Amino acid sequence: MKNMEGRTKKLTLGLLCGLVFVGYIVTVWANPPSGVTPTLIGRGTFDDFKLHADNLDFKVEAKSQIDLVVRTNDYLPGASSGWHTHPGPVFITVTQGELSFYEVDDPTCSPTVVTAGHGYVDTGHGHIGRNLTGNPARDVAVVVAPVGAPFRSELPAPGPYCSF
Image 1: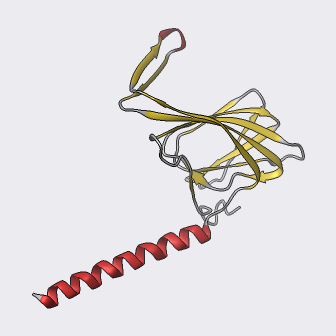
Image 2 (image 1 turned 60 degrees about the horizontal axis):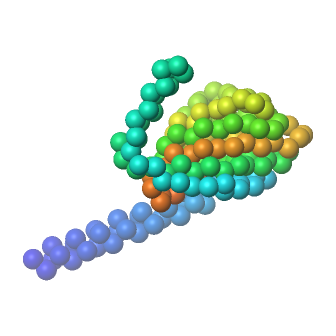
Image 3 (image 1 turned 90 degrees about the horizontal axis):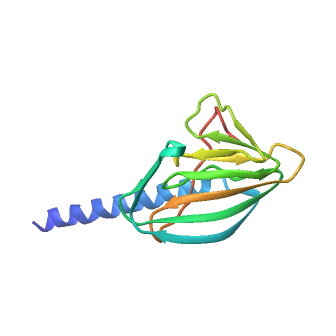
């Protein structure tokens, strides 16, 4: 019996060490933001709701409480948000300049280019925003997140097809 308990403890310790190592590797390989200044405008908790605006053909539903995080991101020329993901959708409006968004799972690494006055919906599965112009750019992001939880997680670059 003691031998079995010893094996279980060693296995648990080994798994814990492995998880710490994987977390370290992901952190080291993460592609951090560069030249982007985020500014939090506000974060609010909303109770569950269901909304259907017929005149806009728009539906949205929160079956439990959610947080909405609103912030601006100022991009210097050549800036990058770094590869990252969100726990829910993000509604991004470019208010100045031009931004190029790339999806982590797009093997063609084709950008969606968004200019001032237009929007981009990030579904939360991983992306990067880049200012590929010689002028500053800015966006306003509305992030849907679990109450009180982080609303951004860093990701490593997706590999050889989109390695910036």
